Length: 490
Image 1 (cartoon, rainbow, N blue to C red):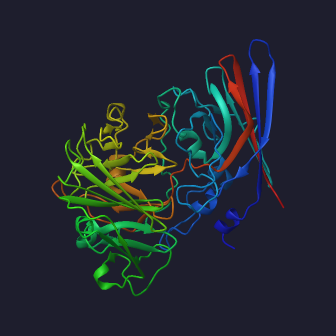
Image 2: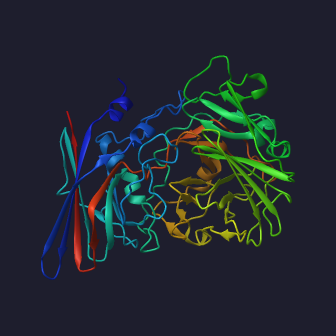
């Protein structure tokens, strides 16, 4: 049995103890509850590349458990959804939209911070042996205030980054240099996709070990009222020695599966194909962009082949998004039927990304985190939708339920890292990330397309979920201690 299989098959029991102590009266309130472990490990340890040089290279050598469970996040309401974005698991893997993070902490952080959500690790009271690990965290009177309805462990790095600082509305200023993809694994040597296939690349499936290309361009697919998706083998989870592992050329390959899906035909000036967990999305418009007065068509196809079609008459917009070219882009039809689109012109790496939220009334909302550059937290083109929350970059989310941009303690990738991994999109059946855009060649050229560069999932996942029997409130006259104990079961 491999190391990854042993971790996935581990039977862990978790217990939470919350202690609130009134600093004036000394009165202590104690709350205890048992948790359950999510299926994050099954996702994290899914085969993400036979050519990935070290699949567990990011795990702590001394205490691997700390890498996976050494962070904590406390939320204001229970997290009780019965599925995740991919439809593969029976509980959420990431914080859902509408849920606020009240407090967070990490087992490798014990400093002060401008983000009042962030607590401190109590190393003297924490302990570890060969079958049990107890994490103890403290929050002072000015830290972690608010309601607590759920306590979740997360990765060690994820505990520091958090799920968005909804109370302080700022980020940690202690210069702890970690980012949302610090546990991404080792990327293989760059592999390229033929130029003619660039605008037809729809998504990637980890379990199939395949990439999906449209048979026709997105614009032609709209015009014909037919989407033909072809799945081709790629060296992701297995290696076919008859196929080049460096130059992916669909013209020299036979598709393993073909899906033909009829859609409402529309005449468009330009269109793009996008993807994410459990869906493929085609977006086109009569003007080739999302400018005021344009008609935008969105057709979303889910993993079961079901089609959702929406038409948006753009009444007003702050930033028009072009629907031509190969620049990084992501999007999704959201649960409220709004269309989210994110776009980045990679010719200028220092320019902002544009993130638009288009409701059914066509009054587009610009949800870009435009103040990031001034704070040294420039936006790159890391896009995604997790649990209904939109990842604006590796430093911020937009929650459409709260209608709020939430900052995290993640630090922006450096310019060199952003150039090599600037456009990352979740796979079709996974939270793993594929990188269809490596580096631009010159300022006047489109980026090289690499459909086979793989990262692992964002590291602020929910390792455990512990919904309390009743909501607990942490107020400014109380300190808080949370003890979270994991025990290995026989």
